[in-house]
Length: 372
Length: 225
Image (tube, rainbow over all chains, first blue to last red; front, side, top):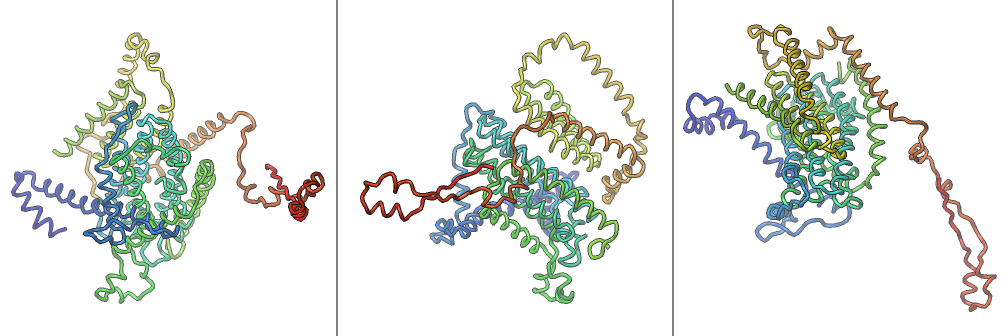
């Protein structure tokens, strides 16, 4: 980063801008560059997550999955499929229904994608690798995940269609219900780590695999993950787009790129949930071998870097939870609506409240291993 | 310089969206403009480095309260012309109330009342946590008012739930606790019956007759729980 700032950005700024605004300009361009470094891989991952989903579910169901579209005449196990899908969707016409509210109809997909991309600002990828190291990072994440619902509700209303509206209503009710359990799970993390800063939360889990918060906060970690599946409207909680009843739910009237932005938002939200679970309950960038192998192993060139802490462990953990999303989708039948509501209000919220008290007692009594 | 520009942009946005919220015709747009004004307020608080209040405003009002508002507004069929009737007639009284409210707010909520004359305001360092300061203030100095406010809110929640309960429940609902304990014998009863065909229709061909005699009719009765 230093090198890029000194050798690329600063000379460019000195050429283009008056001297008075140099520092501002350097800062702005540097930040935009950092944002691009985060967002481009995220969008790439979104594209290939759809490929992974089709391959994984195909494997589980004894099918092959996409295996035709490749590059330069070779099929490469169908790796070109997401690119082909993206091009197809980009060149399709966006049809706005005649009774729809045009401005809101177009704004809805943007409103659903923007919060899930904005949440990446506070995700710590390493000790110093974070775009915005803010004190209230956890709150910021909670605020942004609660905003994603506006895309759905506005899409449902602006489409002026009964199916879309029913889908939006279902989705909103279930997201609002599970947000409470999700918020309580985050409060548990806050109590355990004593900080709202995501970097400090990871630092508080330092030690070994059993020091990570998944063990003292096990019920909260499980509840957070299941609530995450609900919040992203994924199977088995995808009644918002239950195709057997309401065709495709809130995005039934969308086509082309407008639809694919909803699609991207869903997958970007999945990645955000998976990475947040890794950061808050599974030690983020910390290595699982820490505390098991002697410290001298981590000083060995190559192998030490690979086994020691680093962004690669965060990516491995995130990939595992993303695989869980796909696994769950291929395994469980869809929940009925009243069962979803019952699970959220009557089971998850009481469990989180009880476990908050347990965590508070553990912290106050300085329970060894985690809070001493 | 930049901070001031950002402040004026968000203040203008706040005033504009607040004004549009009460003048726009469509109630859904009114709710959306209210959300925009919450966002602008939150941005101004962020400029004040009050990050906890700013984000809590978004979480509570935008993320929860306004969603329920939208829910209701979208499902209602509001007759706008009836609402707009008598606007001119009530304007003088309404205007007087608005002006007096604005005046009293200016008198009570101003910088002097909070000891914030411009020379005493100081900027804190990056490690200063607004959230922590608020927590310390709420749980030490203002502990009793805070707890009492919480208790009042709890009473309001319970009261709201009680208002919706009207007599014993007449609708049918599932009891999952009972459902999981159910055995197959509770739902199905297998009854063995004598075959009716063999006695009543003796003049059929012998092959079919012998088959009928061998098989036992099994009737499955379903009992609804």
